[in-house]
Amino acid sequence: KYGLDNVGLFRVSGNVRVVEKMRMQFELMGDVNLEEENDVAAAAGLLRVFLRDLPDTLIPARLTRIFFSAVQDSQLDKESVVTEVKKALNLVPEENVNL
Figure 1 (cartoon, rainbow, N blue to C red):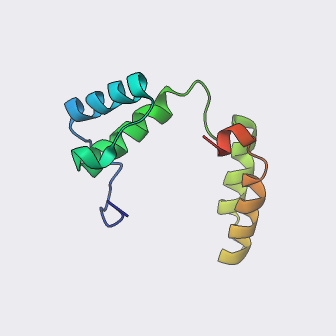
Figure 2: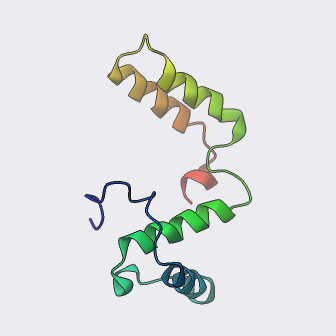
């Protein structure tokens, strides 16, 4: 609910000190109260750091072609694109989906 109206949320860097503080809290305590900082850009930055530091990508390389094909096929209408993307999402390993 917070930050949904922020245009370019993931393009705007959060305060580096705040992001690092939240990252350390997460590593030490296993959780972070994102509302405590009241900084959606920092929360987005924390998510960005987390995703970047994962050992593997969320969508395995072997599936990227399927996703690209689904959204780039100009012959498909919007509903068909959504259907194809849903099919591709079903191929993503469960541990990646439940991240």
